[in-house]
Length: 175
Image 1 (cartoon, one colour):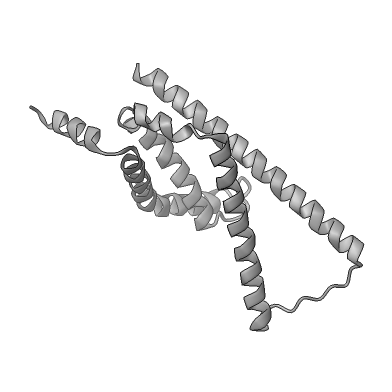
Image 2 (cartoon, helix red, strand yellow; image 1 turned 90 degrees about the vertical axis):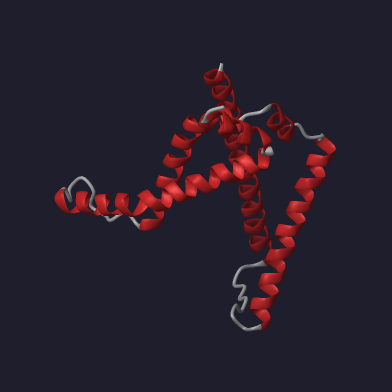
């Protein structure tokens, strides 16, 4: 029994959520290792060719891009150990349960916003001043809510379609 068989047996004994957590921690560790060098490289590039890159790239943006790249690279490397038949069951959800979970999350988000706003008003950090008429204020609130729901829907659609594409590619590459 060689070294690689031990790793395979160890990975088979892990639950899918443990594998995903390990994958995310590895991606974060790799990101922490490479993002300072990428930022220094971007700064050097900016000083050498300022006409190509006139503005400095902030570290948080470099960190985000490095996390994306390290996640893709690690996914390609560890795709066989990430996907199991148990992982498919994570994506199968009863529509009633999904609706309840969505409404619970929506209520928690709205409640936390109201609590933060109330705490800020109580501590006089934020003083609401309404210069607009009630109808104009309600129309702006309504358009912001519709935009938020639409953006959330598009984000969820993009995430789920990307996730399904990654799963599809993972199954193709493992065969």
